[in-house]
Length: 158
Ligand SMILES: C[S@@+](CC[C@H](N)C(=O)[O-])C[C@H]1O[C@@H](n2cnc3c(N)ncnc32)[C@H](O)[C@@H]1O
Picture 1 (cartoon, rainbow, N blue to C red):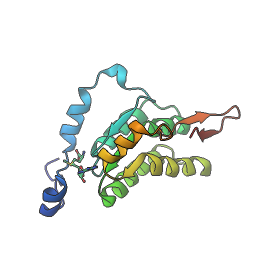
Picture 2 (cartoon, rainbow, N blue to C red):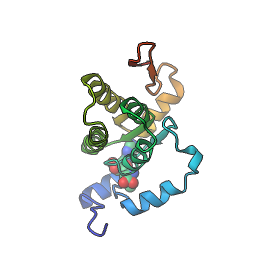
Picture 3 (cartoon, rainbow, N blue to C red):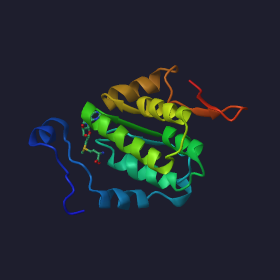
Picture 4 (cartoon, rainbow, N blue to C red):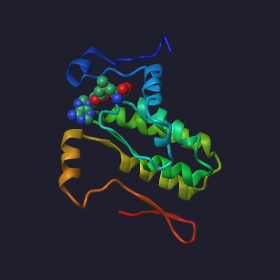
């Protein structure tokens, strides 16, 4: 879109190299990913996610594969985003949350709780270099995994 905002301020460009990717380019880049990689559970990590431009495109493509609200949560749980600025993380979480609620307006309160937990766990404010170094060295830190229980309920594995 011609009027898409790609910077918030000169200071943020200077301090954080913050220049958002226009949606047209995000789509073109996602198109480069082979079709077989697009599954509900295929994992994506965006280590400098900004306000979520790539995350929302990835989630939109995954949502098309989802049959129900539980799939929608599984798809969300496979997406991890990190940014060093909290306002970006707040926006990214809000955008993803709105997508889920638009897709599943009648989802129950448990799904809403899982939605919030997943966003809190997976869309993280921090220095991605430090966080990924921790992930690489600390066996106790894993990306959250959602599992389906015998009763059809879903819960976090870790
Ligand atoms: C060029 S922007 C890209 C944003 C988004 N990926 C997009 O394409 O629209 C870079 C982003 O990286 C973030 N950033 C800079 N240093 C970072 C770090 N050490 N860890 C995590 N995020 C960082 C900035 O806050 C900024 O939002």
